[in-house]
Image 1: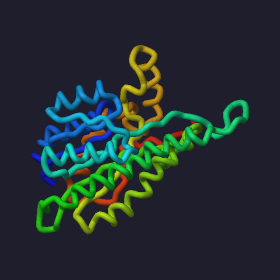
Image 2: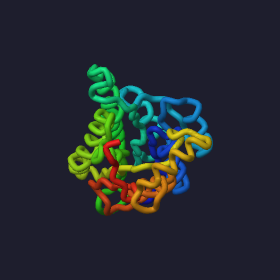
Image 3: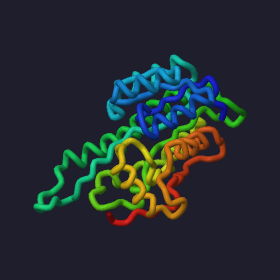
Length: 256
């Protein structure tokens, strides 16, 4: 799929994997709408790419619709990358035996799962009314961000793993739903990727080196650009649909 001149929405595009994906999409000629809660970083990335920043909670219908409307104003909406997500660790029972507050579990699922679906349904509605790109009726592509935690959830990741497993689980049925309007849906499941979440400095580098030893090969963390290249491939390769692709160096996460 040729995305030159097309509009692309990237949620969580103000940093990390979302920002890396946005940069590669922009290099392919996409006009990027960066959706993020952080106005400072989101605006910086949008300015760098000649795109537009929209502050939005991905689970808020009106705010996401505003982002979709902004994208449609830039060109035919062809791309959605669902990069927004959170993953604060918390055990089902804490050390004192107290149960995880339900509102904390609900918040993670709301952002990661409900927010992903909210963006899909609203972006897909706009994609569905664009002109087809080819004789087969191709109109757009959606790429979701899950995690290897969807399969190898660790201690303290009940909410995160459940939300990401939900993203994996809805990939195929949504791809089937949207096939009739020529929209492909795929998901990437990143492993241990080097992003700002690990911090900076000597201690952070030592911690990342230890983490990298658990990766099958190569023995290091992945880079945001390596993950972004898979995102762009899923966007542009017309024959990849309804797939979840692990990008993890072969790692399988231990319990902790």
